[in-house]
Amino acid sequence: MSFVLVKIYRPVYTCLVVDNLKEFICGTGNGLLIFTIDKHRSTGKFLNVHEKRHLKGHADVVRCLVSFESRIFSGGFDGQIIVYDTCGKLDPTTRILLKIPRAHDGIISCLVKAHNVYDHQKLVISGSFDRHVKIWNDEGQLMHAIENFSNVIISIAHIPTTDTFWVTSGSCHARIFDVQTGEDVSVICNN
Image 1: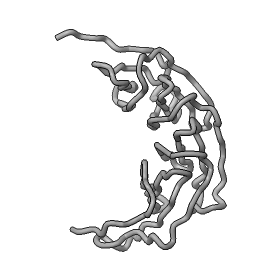
Image 2: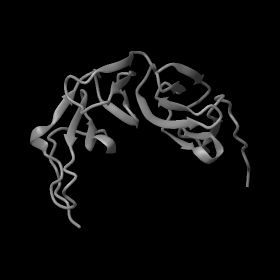
Image 3: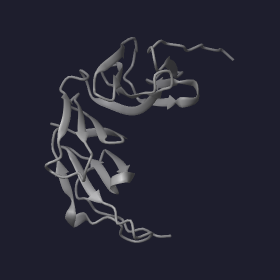
Image 4: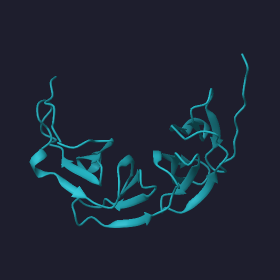
């Protein structure tokens, strides 16, 4: 199987495939670029770069993207989280459902989707250079803020089987938190 390298002609900082829309989304220096995926091709050039669409909203680099059924959450260097409506194809008229201008006081370095098994609520967890982790519901409402990190947040991983998420922040160990409460449930073992 071979694929053609696609030149987008600008830096890409994150990407996401939205399967139900058959679209490939790239986070760039000032918004999102959207390309339709040719679902009839299995090799070669499966993106038409000449039919790209641009979604604005961010004032700086878009660093991370997550998708729920009919929404895309984006986080960026501008500290904003923007929620886009994806009920139809993404184009310049796509509605911004919510803009959280100061979601964080620093670069948003990661977004991850999570699912609370207790009440079946869909969540988005954000991490930032402001050394905070925040848990948001899928409507964009802040549920919990965790502020006791000594370094910038590098990555977050949701572990559905334990209903926890792990956070790395440049220290010697990951910290583990309960998705529902935001409580630190880490136990440090010195082996």
